[in-house]
Image (cartoon, rainbow, N blue to C red):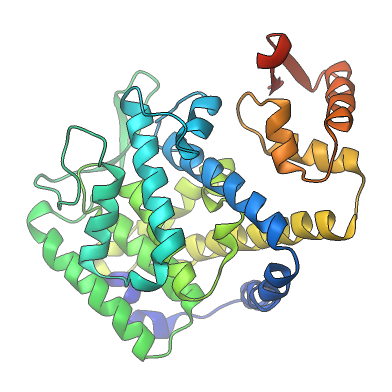
Length: 348
């Protein structure tokens, strides 16, 4: 498709700063095996936290929200979904698990894309895994739900099957041409979103495909650090760069650089966080107080002491309580409830 056309890719030129970003990500990739081999017990904790954060953040980007403790219970499969938002979150959880467990057996094909979309919708009363039947638009909405403006007109419904076939074929051609994966992967995601092949769930499917394609190229950071959380934390830039890079896409005159630069920044942030978290826990860098404070900063909704114990293996409950009291006295967090069911929440 447009961004994956070989002539388009060959015309791209990069600044020294952009080249440095690519080099930095490559260096991070080169170190990841060392971290993975040295700290398996820590990585298991990171994986559990990442799946919870990814399931929550990717859905919240689409306005699908559930209480944090319900999201955590759904991801751990200790409860069943009670309503539509929870059904959506449970479906995303299943799609994530599928990728984490079977990415090497899931090539970038139309059938796999349809499979992921169907998995997201498996608990809903609507069928997933089918291309859109009607034309759709990418719009910006007002708080009351009315359309403020149209951001982008995607490919027409009648042309979607052909466009998706071309996307998959062009992706395969870039591999044969030896194109750099760190350029090809975000280019494929941009083309997917410009096609917008589904009536619903395009953004979530795109984020799942991001993880899948990174796995295919041995960028493993998304297994341990939630890329979806980083997308959500920078959602203004996420949507702005996608919009900027989609202008002129239909004619092949678009500028992919805003999206590429943003995408690489997300990967750099994820790898930095990965190395900091594993390094801190492994070598004891940084105080226990700092580790607990950092864990609280990553929390979006209410959290319990047990959540922080999971995030900070090796730190006692008494120490967690001490830091919680400090942060409460500083006005950074607020208690919610009392007793064994008590929760805390960051002050906005």
